[in-house]
Length: 324
Image (cartoon, rainbow, N blue to C red; front, side):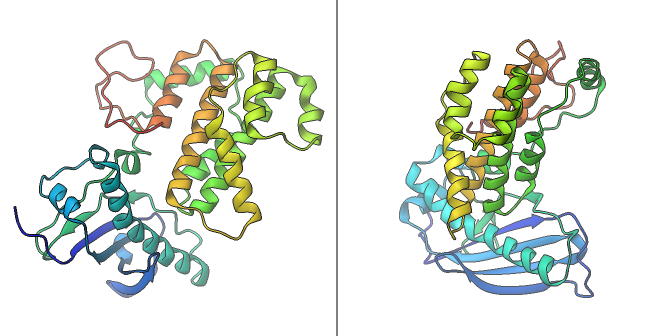
């Protein structure tokens, strides 16, 4: 095995929608984030890309793991997963910091959130690069490839015929998924979960309308637990994740503190899980809709020609399992 160097280099690339007006081919920034860690961000306006790089010392254990060319961080011991996260997070934060400045000071409101994030790479000499082990959870969240095809069009027509209208909470869930600000992601995810449960309860029992809108909201675990059980017979179980979602939202609204990337991811997953459950409460026999929503919640994707929700042929294939 090659001897461990004093430091390794880690780099990543992030892309965004929206134009970045510039006469420069590339622009570089070097600054510190988190621990603190010095990160260099190279912006390529024409390609709408942000390339980040940092140097770091790593443990002997992680060096040994890197020599095996393992790609999935979830296969590694928990301490190494934490160490890998500490290597990756500053790269993501640095891109976001620069994007925020461009939005605020250059009024680039059309500059969208980070849409494409390639798994980071590592190198001992900055010449030969290899993939850094990454969690499937971090890079498969938005990887669904199911589109508007004959079977989905037929299903959507059935929803329209039934006069079904999705919960308003789905709009906030979509915004939470798109957002690269973990603080905003947590808050929108909580709004999605709270709006959806209230709308669900009112649909199930219309007489609850005034009570739901005029009285201070109960904690999430009561909304999704005892109240949903009383009026629909189908409580969310367990309610711990959605309750934590509400607590995270309250903490961020009332305290001047940041949210971590893990907070953002957990909040979106908890909200998606909650809304998926509410959909099954409203449409208990709608297996196709539940499967479509479940696929989006878990980050599954479907290859062209493979079985999709509502199709009877061929076997479905999914990517690596994502935590749910």
